[in-house]
Amino acid sequence: MSNVSETLIPKIGVITDVRIDTPDIKTFRVVTPDGVKPFDHRPGQCAMLSVPGVGEAMFSITSSPTNTEFMEFSIKKCGCVTDWLHQAEVGQQITIRGPYGTPFPVDDEFAGKNLLFIAGGVGLAPLRSVINYCRHYSDRYGKIDIVYGSRSKNDLLDYKEIVDEWTKDANVDVHLTIDNPQEGWDGHVGFVPNYVKELGFDTDKTVILCGPPIMIKFTLDGLCDLGFEKSQIYTTLEMRMKCGVGKCGRCNVGSKYICKDGPVFRFDELDELPDEY
Amino acid sequence: MRKCLVEDINSVLAQINKAAKVYLPVDGTDGKARFEEWAEGKEWSNALNTERSAKDFFFPQTENLMEFKTEGKNIEIIDIRSDKDDFVIFGVRGCDVRSFDILDRVFLVEPIDSFYKARREHGIIISVACGRPSETCFCGAFGIDASNPAGDVTVWRTKEAVYWQSNTDKGEELLKKVEGLTDCDEAAVEEEKAKIKKIMDKLPLANLSTEDFGAGKTMELFDSDKWKDLSESCLGCGTCTFVCPTCQCYDIKEFNAGKGVVRFRCWDSCMYSDFTQMSAGQPRLSQLERFRQRFMHKLVYYPERNDGIYGCVGCGRCLAKCPISMNIVKVMKSLGGKDNE
Image (cartoon, rainbow over all chains, first blue to last red; front, side):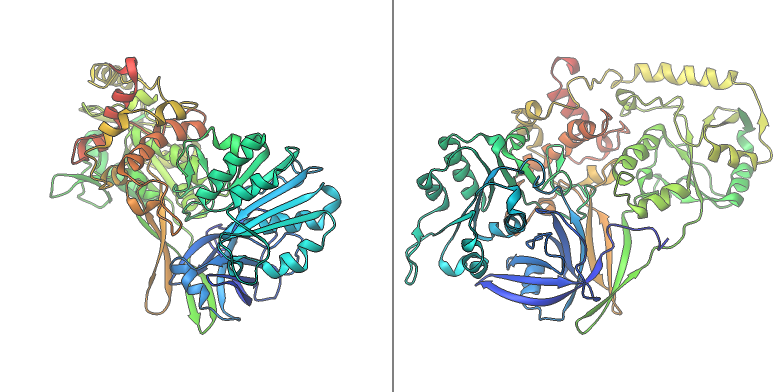
């Protein structure tokens, strides 16, 4: 039996780096005990991480597939598994299985397009994989705009990478915003949906949107006001998951399983589904 | 077609049991039928159906998946899957036989669930036609023929004799090993089938219609205002999901066994509030939403993904067991518009 692969049986992963991103988000670098990347993935896919005795949960893979050395997960402290991970040290082993879900269509529908990424809070985590993929293959895409907002400067995920790398790319424009004025912040202040409207983007862009539900709702409304079609706007959904392969039955929206048919959806596709996410 | 006399059934089962362990419906001291391992002296129950469905054989209520040993920061994963022996489930009704097909379409599609597959491959199903279907039966609504159920072998029981027909190579191989079955023509079975069909046609739920359900009905039915009344008294106990032969949702949990952590899966229920509860929020806040999910899944979502096949087999267990007498038939009648008036 043991030679038959079983998707529920994970691999061992080793945490080789823990980066404190914000007061409640840490980014974990994971490799196998042999020191290699646990498996290949596509931008927007997820993995099940577990701590035996604590539990298993689904996380988006924040590192880009173009990173061949390791995987990264940006994890907000908000439950049993994440609490435990936040106190884990370098060298700690965890278990990992995946990749799960349908990725963003980076090689077909996104190809040749101007891209507009809009993220709020930890919503940048799943988009970072796509952003870095598109930056890596910048000749395959048009201009890349990134609008990212969080509560405060300290709550901006991947701030160092954004400033040191993303803002330096010729074809990338980064637009950061925080909710309230703060000492040492001379950038934009205000909520993401309003900022998107102020920036007033051309409707030739393909949009990738992720963040808290309320931010998604208002940003989507704002984009539609600007003249964007829902068929141009992608998002990635979050649901409780146990199996990751469309069998345990809990992550469905209508007849779609978010773990398998998602998590990536276009908003016109979501309009065809019941409003239960 | 083969036959044996009713009084010889035990010796036939004894022979089958030599080839592979046999499970059959047996009446318990509480008067309820359940599948038990065959042994000399165990009597095949006359009950129409077992209290619990037969899904346990392939999808047990709890099942250990793997073990972990942890030492310091290190983890060892132990694959505890083992080779299975062949087994025979004797006396499965047509509704439960169909439920296996419904579960197959979940567990045997890529990526295949090897735990389920191992059990399924080793199971030989001997079904039995329903001589006396009950007024809670509505398998016919889902195209199941209780007079001629599927399975590796089909059995018909009349007053005097038990008739055996193999439907698969697996079934034929098994019957070949049994001495004491004599060849016969199909006359008696045809008569029995006709008798059963006649009863089926007169059952109170014989005309239950699925016309208003199935693929493409999501938005229309999801937004129906009838869910409120239907779900109002639902206790969220989950009994319907546990007795249901097609409910396949599961949870994965762990316990510390002292010398290591055991990860197991167990049946779960969409009727429970923690089923979809996340740190980030809860997409199904009220019992209405959870209740609606269960019936939408069986009547719309499942068929949408599975060539129009419904996720219900009409066994009637939920009709018999729901403490507030709510069930899929009432839901179909309420939502089904004119066809179910």
